[in-house]
Length: 118
Image (tube, rainbow, N blue to C red; front, side, top):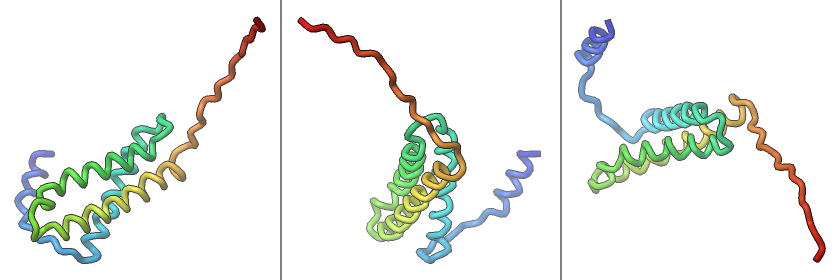
């Protein structure tokens, strides 16, 4: 059933043309936020989970847009895509960390110091 659904989706998938309009950039904003939120959630035991989510989502878009950065006629569009995606990643990682996950409590170190006078 999954193969049939994939074949039907591929059958109806056509060429898509990108443009630098608001709806295109908002999709990058939302996609960056969702990806950062998912990665932040998967690292919920880490103290730096929001930074990990932000960095992973940002790295994905930069690696994806590398081919477009190399072409002078597509560089401006790639820069816009990366900018909006990184902004969405920052918002998604921050909001997931702050509002969806339980607060991270860092362990407090308690110890005993033994000093001896010579």
